Length: 459
Image (cartoon, rainbow, N blue to C red; front, side):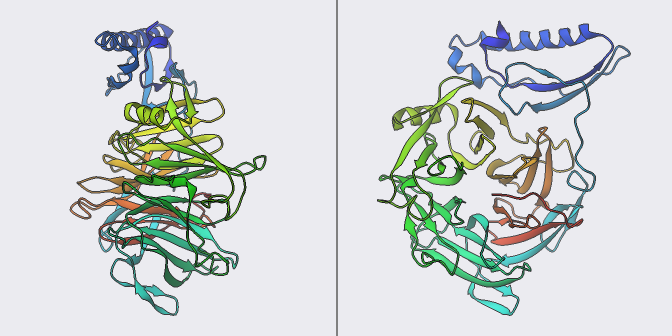
């Protein structure tokens, strides 16, 4: 009765056992712990706030050879999962290796990777034919690497500067990956935090202030809309402290569906269903669209409601201060930076699950993911999700595999980038270069695998 009535975080138990009675004892003990916690609060709706008591030591005896993986199950479930075989390990040579200090960059990097600084705030960018005219922008934040018709790509990057000094900039690469141009694409906006790429290869940049809006930019120099950024319907007439954008696209629909996070304690995650594709899909006064808001019904199911007040109530209770968001294969994943939580919504079954982020344990390697999760991206096969981090003591960039293990991609050397945050996470269209950096210091890195293989391809 306890297992079905009360929500609590679940763990994967991987047992190789000679005595099945031991498993029963462990499960029963866990049930008693949660039952005792639940009885402290008569209101079942608030029991989800009870913290988990974790097993921190594995005991091996002659009767049991037990291995406990202390990572929550990723998909919605209310039963512990018993796995007969060992989970697959990370491919040798990619993540989970020792961290190597790179003093000239101020970071510790997984030994399977290489990193190069390609830009720094206040300095001109080194291009293949000389330096850029503009200096690299301050307060870089959300970004995306977008393919161009000429075979190259552009790394679009927000500036979170205040008082109308924000905007969007583009660093252009040719088909060989050499930077050849850097310019401003949007100006006059404030606190451009993150955003998202559209299916037609434009960039949506969202402002994070009380009346912020989301702006669409076409970074393709040959496009008729290149010099004409537009306000979109994503921000609504009242605006808000918007963060990131994810897209659900289906060939069977008239237009894609967009999801927008808002960094408020009651910031309701919004869903905008469009009715066409291309430049007019998000244009104010363009094709018709419908906006609804995420509402958790209980600790397993959710709905989309047209009542914004209900959405805000749900955000306050279940998912405050949402930031990074990504959509893949029917799953919408987003983070609450304030609560250090990842949420996953299955839009087909209308169920949801959540887990705490790194918790300071990197089972697959060195380092520690102690800070608040911020940006997030995932690959087509969802083998890994990647996170940026905000923390007062130092920051890094981390990966989570499909089994719930965390790995350090890079993190600050002790004493470096203190109080900063990692930002600008994206992967080049060919899948071989990952971009990320530090906001206050304004440095941008290009990170590649030593084996020259792809990280993963990204939308």
